[in-house]
Length: 132
Image 1 (spheres, rainbow, N blue to C red):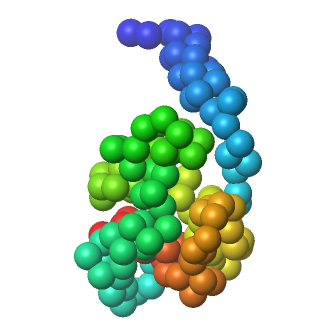
Image 2: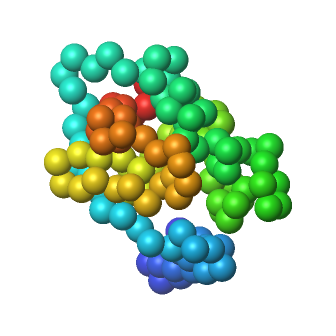
């Protein structure tokens, strides 16, 4: 059985690695959680919303196939060209690009075209639904 100190030490080490990986990137700012909720009659899905949103605004930089300068400083491994990658980083996406009752995060994308407030609100809702 691991001691509490062993588990805490492991967690601190993992956090230090994660923080260190972003030290040389401009995108260190974390936005606020939007507080978006999943609508009771959600109609948003990857097929009818998420895939197009990511293609239009995110995967130019956040793609598993983009390397080097093509990533334009997007951290390696923060990729949104698959539903699994989106779900893995849903909190990160919410804090950088979505809108909800508690915050409107417009840090991403940095360049045009940029999503409308309505699109950002839908993104927040879609993510809150678990990115179905």
